[in-house]
Length: 313
Image (tube, rainbow, N blue to C red; front, side, top):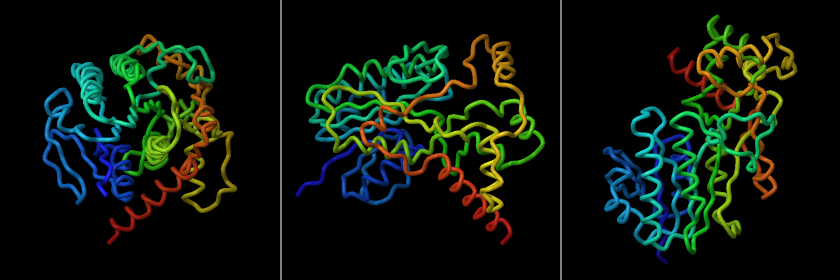
């Protein structure tokens, strides 16, 4: 029996590499798109080329049943529209020529931009501000137009972290006076962390779920009371010490209005730090977060211990 073919862009990123690992474990024929020469495990076919090369994309998707689009330009503003929007448009055009049955597009909670809502959900109007937000919103709109005969899902993760890129958890991990000052200033603000494994699991979850028309879902753990800069600091230190009873949600820090005003002065726009993104919709579909905030902190504490032990040897 011929294996199903699954294509992944951004396959070496935090989310993409976890999707690839799952696909290989499940016996899929995996294709990845890369501009670089990579050392890859068995079972993966690399298509060398750029995401705006339509010839390569046609070859990449030919005969494929699934596409996970995780690639994005995050740093270089001059390339964001080309990669994030034009690249997505060309992928969709190639998908029309293939026999694609499932398309998962990884967008970003950042497409919401500035908002006055304290709890943001999929019905919240998008008001993207910077180049990245605008490019991801434009790409998302293209994807939400759908592909005939193909199930389409858009995911909007918040701040994706993992053991190598701990995001807000780098503050308690480094634990110096500089990090303490940051937590003192921003402590009450939501950190919006979500582990990459939970995002990858969400992308995989809908392979076997009925989706009648293009659907969009936030992927967030913002309902966790310790998903703040101060809360994560205390949770990290408590797990590090092996005493969860020491966790306090009352660490002294400045009111959320202070960092908000500082950002307004520096950037000219900002959301209040108490804005949160809701995962009620994806949870209503039966999806359950396997890692969550506690699991993410536990993994990063364990990773640090292993790293510390390696350094001592």
